Image (cartoon, rainbow, N blue to C red; front, top):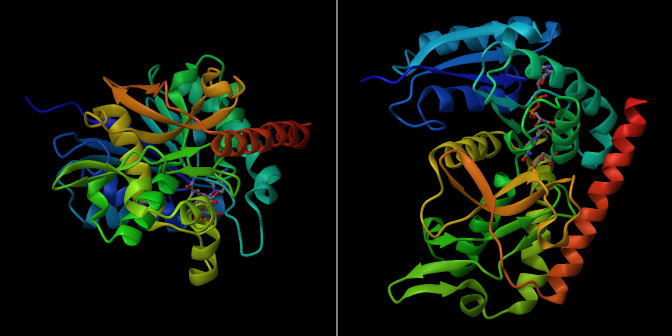
Length: 332
Ligand SMILES: NC(=O)C1=CN([C@@H]2O[C@H](COP(=O)(O)OP(=O)(O)OC[C@H]3O[C@@H](n4cnc5c(N)ncnc54)[C@H](O)[C@@H]3O)[C@@H](O)[C@H]2O)C=CC1
Ligand SMILES: O=C([O-])CC(=O)C(=O)O
């Protein structure tokens, strides 16, 4: 029997990530090839005409899974009954800006949209915040939408996770699909800690640990980390625009794994509400390694943390605490 359509909200849908993301959703890259969808697209009035253009293109593309499109500048209409909310709307970082610099512009948007989601989305709505500062926007959204369960509000660090897989695959000259279990700890910012200590590559002789295969601790502790941390800035420098196709694709990966589950033996990185695991202060949205099953994520427990990692994990937690106070000061 055909499945009932799920409603997916994309905010900032007239922007560059939105333009890459909505066709992926309509093709089944987010919720599976047998899951019909109705896409709700929200943007602000100055972008209304462009948003309508995106709607026209979705109609023109004749996607078999696409059962309806709502294009609106009304946040209530946009949130109505949505099962998945991908929050991309906001002001993007420009060359030379840190993600913190876009804080005041974005946290007030997330405070306002929290109430609309709380009142009008489906009760089990899963929320993914993409717009920067992603962790802190998600935290603000959570705090101003208290009736949405904590576990349903997440932020995107899957792009960083995928970037880390990509760097290891290039370094070892192996296919990216054979690399797994890197970790992004912490903030989606330049303090994030990309950790390859537990990552493996599937070889003809079974899974081998990445640090053993790389055999260059210095590279893993310096160049690898810096490249992943700075990849967003490098893309901005090259394109004069921030990452869009990789962000859209990673947003699909995030929701797909959350809803449909992670493959056995694999974990992924998601920005989730900290419960104090690994000594990270509870009450932050922090990126952890997670597995997903039946629509629920769980933090992977029991990984050995060495002194180098401990320091990096704490430094990015510290930045998130600072961002949290800065966000509140912007809202006052
Ligand atoms: N977490 C991650 O891995 C990544 C996050 N980003 C962030 O994603 C966000 C979007 O990036 P782009 O699509 O490149 O930006 P963009 O500027 O092309 O699109 C943003 C869209 O949001 C709309 N918008 C602004 N205020 C809004 C509001 N109150 N409600 C609804 N829509 C609103 C704008 O009109 C625009 O159409 C930025 O904050 C960017 O920094 C980008 C790449 C990766
Ligand atoms: O760097 C930016 O501002 C855009 C972004 O979040 C990324 O590409 O990771």
